[in-house]
Structure formats: C-alpha cells, structure tokens
Amino acid sequence: MGPKLLFIDIETSPILLTSWTLRPPHASAVYVVRDTYILMASWKWSHERTVHTAALPDFPRYKRHRHDDKDLCGVLHYLLDEADIVCAHNGDAFDIKKINSRLITNGFKPPSPFKTIDTLKAARRAFKFDSNKLDNIGRYLNEGRKIPNTGAALWRGCVEDGDPKAWATMRRYCKQDTELLARVYERVKPWMPNHPNVNLYKAYQDKPGCPKCGSENTQRRGIAVKLSSKYYRFQCCDCGGWFSGMKV
Ligand SMILES: [Zn+2]
Image (cartoon, rainbow, N blue to C red):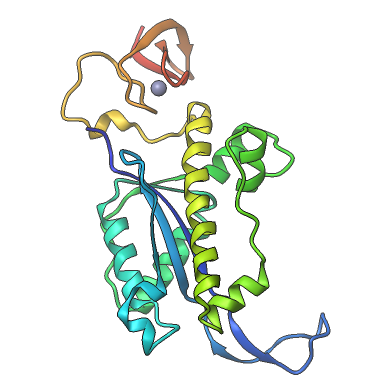
C-alpha cells in the first residue's frame, strides 16, 4: 500500500461588493457585502476510479443558509486530514490555501500535515507549453478538455439564483476537472524530479522501487553523477521516471 494520494478541485464564489463606478481604473469596493466562500469540490483517491463531488445544496444547511460553506468545509477538512499527498492544478497557490482560509474562518483546527503535488508547477518546471492551463495541457497531451463553462452566468445561477440546473452544470464541470487533473498528473509524473517518494509509505519492499509510482519493475542504467558522489542510476520500466539508488 502506497500513500493516500488525493486529487482535488474546488469552485469558489465571487466576492459580492458595492462600487460607485464600473469604470476602471476607478472601480473599487465601497464595502464588501459577502466574502468569497467555497461552492463545491470534486475529488478522487488515486486507488479509486470514482470521482466524488460535494456541493452546497447537498447539505441541509443550504435551505436556510445559501452562502454558508461550514458543512462543506467539514468534508474538505476530513479529506485533507486523510490524505498523505494532495494533488491539484495550481493547488499550492490557490486550492489548498483557499480551503485553509475557509477552514480557519469556520473555526476548524489544521488538518494533519500532507505533502503536495502541483501539476501547474510541474508543467512550468519541465516544459514550455504555450499555455499551462489545465484545459490546454489536457489538449496537448490528448487527455481531454475541460467542459466549457458559461462563466459569469453559471456562477450567478448557482450563487444568486440557487438554480438546480446551474448547480448540475457546475457539478459536471468540477467533476471533469478532477478527472482531467488525475490523467494529466499520470503523464507529467515521470518528468517530476521532486515527486514525493511513495516508497516511504510502504511497509516493506524487496527491490529498489520507483519513487514516483512505486513499481519494482526497474532497471539499473548507468551512473548518476551528483555534486560530491556517484550513484547507481535506475529507470522505472512502468512510468519511465529516473532515480538514483546506492552510492557507487
Ligand atoms: Zn515509476
């Protein structure tokens, strides 16, 4: 058994604020009516095929408090607490921090620590794609696209109108994002030099395992020369990633 790897994507509400003018650059908030909050999340565990979703209307609280994400935050807290590694696209800068900020606002304690994999950082580090948006990476790698969303109208339908059709669309959109994220991760994984070592989460192993995918189907191929020492170099025959083993 390797680490519990969680793929996750969240959708958030826009900030509701008042302004004296719509004309930039003078448009600025006179006061904030409602801060941003989490509308829904989709997630998948790496050992499962199912993508799960939870949206505000799934909770009884929604009937009386349409903009209250406390119960949804409870689910997110549980997920982060369970996970050894959390993978999201731009997760280090957005999803995880946004979840954290809603957790503390709703009075939660921190979830147990986990490592993160950010596919946006990984893409920026290894490649020069024309665009690093998940939708475009999915297109370049033939792994699928995001479902086109109707933008402002969709968010308004969910946030202000509570329209069940808009929520259904939001759910499909968010679910597809996590499916795409998991596929893009699999493609980018062998190219990530700083992928957390999944072997450390195993009870025991016989052969040197691939640190990225855990496969023991590996081959010794040459020598890795580092700053002060040389190491035996291996390649994983499953994912294709390289790693170094014992000192020569
Ligand atoms: Zn591998």
